Image 1 (cartoon, rainbow, N blue to C red):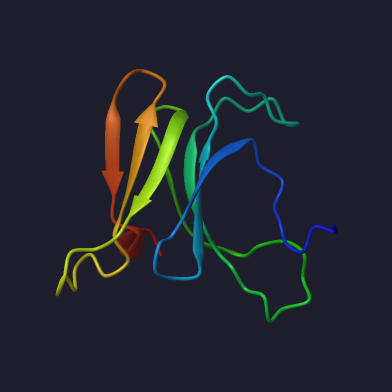
Image 2: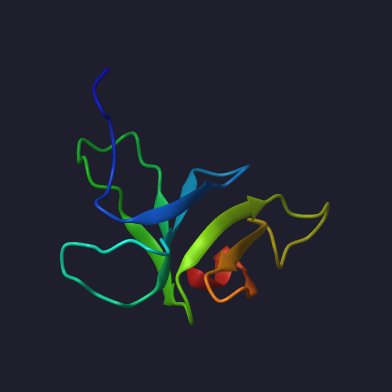
Length: 105
């Protein structure tokens, strides 16, 4: 089966439960082609109408550490501030950080 969309990242990923987005956090213990030591959280739009293979980045921010795990949870009922839910990341230093994807976009 052919790959229909993608991006070149060494990342832990999580799908948005209720919207067409994918979160990717720089994976702990991986080295990318640029040998970068940076850590980032990125949000990609799952755009299946476009003919482009590369997923477009719609939001991003730096992270204090690389990611061991990543999860995207549903918003609470009636929550406008967290309409896209929350992204939680387990970091390599043992910390857990939480982001509002609306503020990243």
